[in-house]
Image 1: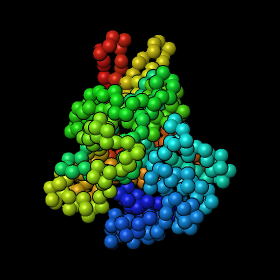
Image 2 (image 1 turned 180 degrees about the vertical axis):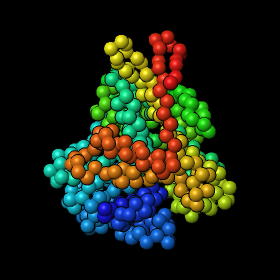
Image 3 (image 1 turned 45 degrees about the horizontal axis):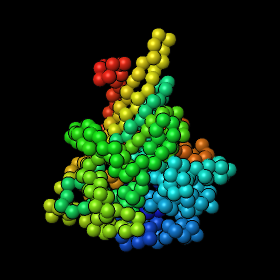
Image 4 (image 1 turned 180 degrees about the horizontal axis):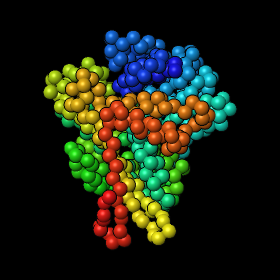
Amino acid sequence: MRIFVLGAGATGSLLAQLLERQGHIVWCGDRDPVRARRFLGRKSTIAIAQVNARNLRGVVKAAKGCQLIINASASVFNEIVLRAALRLRSHYLDLSSHLTRNPFQSEQFRYSKRFGEKRRSAVINAGAAPGLTNLLVKRAAEMLDEVQSVQIRLYESTESRDPISQWSPVVLFDEAISDPRIYRDGKFKLAKRFSEIEKFRFVDPVGAARVVLAAQDEVATLPRFIPMRDLDVKIGGNEIDRLRRWHKQGKLSKSRGIAKSRFPDTSSPRKIANLIRQGILQNARFAAAVLVEGVKRSAKEDIRLSIRSDVLFPSLYTIRKQGRFTTPVAFATAHVAAQFVRFFPREDPGVFAPESLPGEIRRDILSGIRSQGLKIMHKITILKNVPGDEDEF
């Protein structure tokens, strides 16, 4: 395909390179081509057009001739890029929702009818979290006759002396000042920021970590496609601990805006390499866990099951050994998004969340993710009526 990637930062630039390796014709658009070139690397032949994502006409002009347009910039631009895709009669993909019109309804679905009429497809929230997490929830749900609860747990940690943005500081700040979305007793609700602390055990080497409620996009789509009673998303790690501390100190608010000292610009590969050499940045990790509880019915009895999926993404140290200088979050998001593109549903018009994609495509994406070396582990546990008494198989 001919693919235009809007936003050539840490994630967009790596995604563009991965898509080029898949054999696609790729070019990028960014408001700062010089900065974008630092992310792509001087040796890269991927073209970069200067374009302001707020300017619909400019986006259409820069992306002219593409068959797929990807919004790898901030989600606040989703609707502009969606309209650009419709004007160009191209397919569309993004990595997250903005959720300003309705905190519980992804804005991209407003364009379902128009994409259907144009016989084009749009895949939304197609990154690691949301994205891969949605696919894992759907996989577990298909093994059950009734889904009761879903828990998504994320871990982001950076071992560094100073705050270092693993991804877009704008997105990180937006999540930090937003109230978490939860789904409880069959109803959407907003919760308090950094609330409901619990101790959760991730797979080794992460281990046990405190997690708190976070404003994640999975809550806005999963209950609409999978009947369930409860769903929440929590995040742990030293990055969320730092944000929680600033929140308690009153240093996080929309009116205060983004403080560069707390939300620095995303580091380019060269800068990350320098930070590592200087000993400022030692390591970073990103992990995800999905737990789905429900009932499997048979003629003899109903069995309560807990289905757990764990994903341990490559650490900064592992990525560095591969000769790359990027963060685990950007690495994970770009590699997962590349598989969503590889198995893009071009023959199925409309707007799709990951969990609403056709089953064969979802399975192909998961297989493709594993082929890239990302570890996905599954465990099924039988839950007996007596609390705490469990059998594994």
